[in-house]
Image 1 (cartoon, helix red, strand yellow):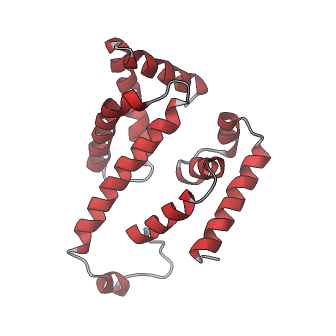
Image 2 (cartoon, rainbow, N blue to C red):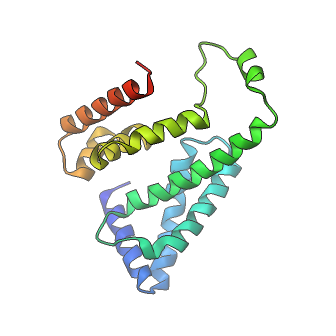
Length: 182
């Protein structure tokens, strides 16, 4: 996604806040493929992706008045996408716990296969991330969670690429220490 698109979304959101229905409609139309792409990177269930896209659009609709046009639109949107995805995963895994015991999972696990983290592990990571300074947390999320390149993050945040890489590395090291995953 180009910086121009981000600026367009920012302008469309500001116009929509002022009651411009065409801007609002255009904004939502442009967001759908982007949201779908973000979610498809972490969810393989196409129906779930579409459900979360719709939930995200509903949240954007309800929360648009809280968006500050002075700030970039994309981080605001991605926060909503992440909240909706987390809600979905929480419900999904809560439902699975009724049917699958941890013993069953352990019996079929293979030490060479990477498994999805548990909800409690995700909560621990979120808690550890919340303790970081905002700038460090944002860099880490953009690179490690949202999949942006160091160059894209550097451009977005007005930093040089080396500083972004160092920040991401230090954050990862700090999280590993805090979570006991040396």
